[in-house]
Length: 340
Ligand SMILES: Nc1ncnc2c1ncn2[C@@H]1O[C@H](COP(=O)(O)OP(=O)(O)OP(=O)(O)O)[C@@H](O)[C@H]1O
Ligand SMILES: [Mg+2]
Image (cartoon, rainbow, N blue to C red; front, top):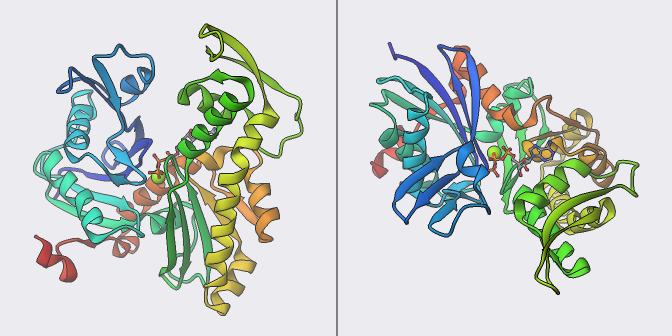
């Protein structure tokens, strides 16, 4: 018997963990602050608070980029040090991790290696395709559905998936996420107001405004630096400017959704028209996003109750149910054996 079972959804923005024994889900920012290049100064939420505020000898880094592990060692430090913050992973435990589908086998294997090497004597590590976990988190009948479309709007990526008959039919990982929108807001504020704001500030603007809401004249005053005088100051930024910045990346997502639908087999596409599109991932909290997707694609669209923890909630159900456990597979099986 394993000591405990954990479900892990390692996102580019936030790590989400389900702890079976405690029956809780916890989240921490996927961020690490390094002092003088090598020493760990802070991890998780504490490190995120230092982003763009830390002195020059402290570097704040995101060890994951675009949905995959970009810096294996930093990611390993991060997981190990989160544990020291009282987030205990018991020795000899079992892990079920959600991984993106549309990445290379080597990138998938990196998730597996990370957990094997960062946690105390993992007894077993199993993998679930993240969209399958999302579908379970959405309470969809993965095994019997004739077709559903899931869009996971994450921090660095947007993952599009078509699921039918218990498996993945189509999947695409777009390199567009919350950070893309934020960078676009920074750029537009810079060009239109000669005013430089941080990515963090752009995120605050984006989260407080949303799209498709009626208060088009709303303004929010934020801190930044005037690029003409060089002086730090506060300026009012309008909701319409933030929306304008989000327009192009959002259109790109819609185009990709339509193009994946076009390539979906007709009978599955018909079922999607009946069952609808489901939104998950933190950015799906954006007010009006559901209506936007529905109008642009022409298919009924619904959002998960707590979209950012939808996949990890799915892992929770997979861990708890003997029947759903079959959705998880081992990387040591069949095709993966050669990689060991
Ligand atoms: N209320 C909100 N409104 C709008 N955006 C939000 C809200 N809450 C969180 N977000 C955004 O959600 C994103 C994080 O979502 P999520 O946790 O799903 O990403 P992730 O899983 O870490 O990233 P990825 O799946 O791309 O690797 C961030 O960009 C954050 O700004
Ligand atoms: Mg994610």
